[in-house]
Length: 271
Image 1 (cartoon, helix red, strand yellow):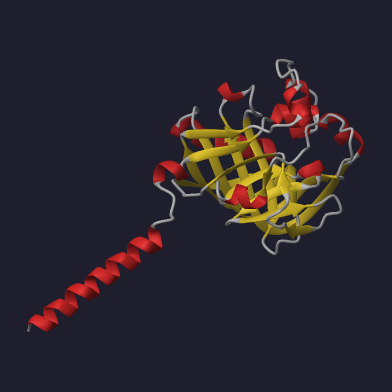
Image 2: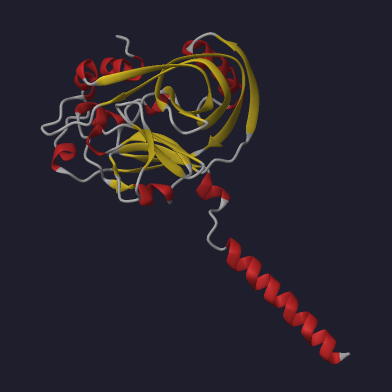
């Protein structure tokens, strides 16, 4: 009987150690509810396309998000822990862990809320519906969302990789932007909401990137429409930022009002 009891205790102890070890490297709830930002959008719009963190480092800070790559080489979409590049030629590829990134927003996705979206005629209608949920949940939080469905129309953009000396982003998009239109494409919108008080660090409101289910199409969303889809919201009440350390960024005058350029960059429209 004593031998049987000892064996049972040892087995329980081993199972506990295994369970603790398996979960020991998981992020806590506090660590997961943080938006991790690389650089300022205002630095990117002024022309700092120098990668400052690697894809491997970015994956330590989140499993979903948006951004761009060194030399502005395509649009970044992170989904389910995988980082994709939507390139200027319309192709999509997984990037190597050594790829570097000058700007991004990522977090660890935990669906806190969901909502149905119906009869969305354009991207502004999408923002209006999402803003209703934001108002309900709290406009001063950060949100990362996934909108999954089949999209009647999806218009996305990317851009040609740049060479130094870098031009401001609004200038790049006048000549080096590439636009792609897709019909009846199934996939996921990855969206990020930045509250209004962050206007000197990022573009406030919504910023959307898209990737198709088959991972062959994607980019920064300019327009979209769809009949129905489901949006999942991850609410974040934490924010952390990693600033680049290079001569270009360190010499920028970041007090300059860039709101007009940021609107052109985000939507293609003048303020």
